[in-house]
Every structure is written in C-alpha cells, then in structure tokens.
Amino acid sequence: MHRPPPPAAIPPHKQTELPRHIGIIMDGNGRWARQRHRPRIAGHRAGVRAIRPVIEACHAAGVDVVTLYAFSTENWSRPRTEVLALMRLFGEVIDNEVDELHANGIQIRALGETDALGSRLAEKVHQAEVLTANNTTAILNVAINYGGRAEITEAVRELARQDADLTQLQPDQLGRALYTAGLPDPDLIIRTAGERRISNFLLWQAAYAEIWVTDVLWPDFGAHEVGLALADFASRVRRFGQVVESPPADDKAPARA
Image (cartoon, rainbow, N blue to C red; front, side, top):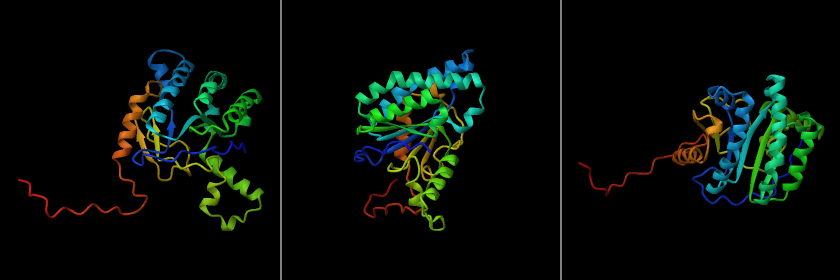
C-alpha cells in the first residue's frame, strides 16, 4: 500500500462556518468534449485547466485541505487509448504544476496505489510528494488509482500485518491506517455534472460530509461555483446524529401584524 507522507501541518481552522476539508468528484469531462464534438482527451485537458482556479478559490476562502478524485480503480476499464492518454496527461500536470504549488507552500499527497501507474509516473508522483513534504500552507490530496473499498480493505490488511487484534478493532484505529491519517475528515463533498452518487470516494471519511451536487461539468467549474458551494454549506445545520434545539423565542419581541 502506497503511503503518502504524513501531513506536515494543518493550519488552525479560523472560519467554522466553512469547510476545513473539501473532497471533489471531478465529473463531466467526457460530456464536455462530446457537446463540442471533440475527443474525450480534449475534455480531460480542459478539466486539468479547471483545477488551478478551483484550488486557488478554496485556498482564498480558507479551506485547508482539498482532495481531488482524479482516477478511480474502476477507471482502468475504460478504453486503453483513453487510459494511456490520461497517464500521459497526469505526468504533464506534475511537470507543469508542482513547482508553483511548491512555491505556494502546498503539500501534495497521492491517495491510491501509485505503483500500478507505471514506473515513470509513479516516480514523478513520489518526487512531487518528497519535494512538497514539509509545506504547511495547505494540503492537496490527489486520489489516483484510488477506491474507497480498496483503501479500507488494505488498511485492515496493514493492521493484520502489524499483528493488531482485529477482534478488538476500533474506528479510530482503522482511521489511522487510511491514506488520510492525520487529516480532518471532509466536511463537504462536491460532485460536478449532476450525478448523485459518491462513486467509491472516501467512503469511510465522508460518513458525515455534506454533499453538494451541481449540473455544471467539471471543465466549466470555477471560483463562482466554489462560492456557491461554500455559501450552501454555511447555510446548513450539521447535527452529526444529534438533536439541535431551535433557540427559544424571545417573549419580549413585539407581536407581528
């Protein structure tokens, strides 16, 4: 199991009405390309261009951690030509973006079995993690060759290899064996392109995450949509299974006509 570097630091959360950790299911690249009668890889390239402004908008708003769902364990079933093109694109993104992310103090962490990406891409991922391992401004997790079920399964296997007594396994113990160990769970999961499912993304961590779905396709998603998602999140009352009492009415308040 690939282990990303531990979080270097998580800044104190200053705005409790906003999410500290956002997970984003980036969906709709193929539909974006099809609407324009272009090949699917053109949609993926357009999707890559959407990443930087979204990260910048999240950071400007005070979000400490962003997790992007880039490539799932199920995506290997796509046509081979598309998968190979995606792997090349991931390598290009690392080459073009890592230095600036590093300069801005962003720690990059890969969530998933990166060894299966091929030796060249896996090494680029590793070098990006090493380069940014001590950055403390914010954290960018990239879920690549990632699946929530696979993550949980491998975490249990890892605990077994450590001779943990699985009959006494506690939730926090399992949490420490996941890729996101040391990070707050996502407060908000955003999904683009209108699909209303979680698609094997952060299954354990998203237990109490708020869900925000938009019909906007990922290549068209930007700072404006980030603002809408954050405003919607701020309007919600998070109960975490508890009963939240309404504030008592003010008996001295004047009667309304």
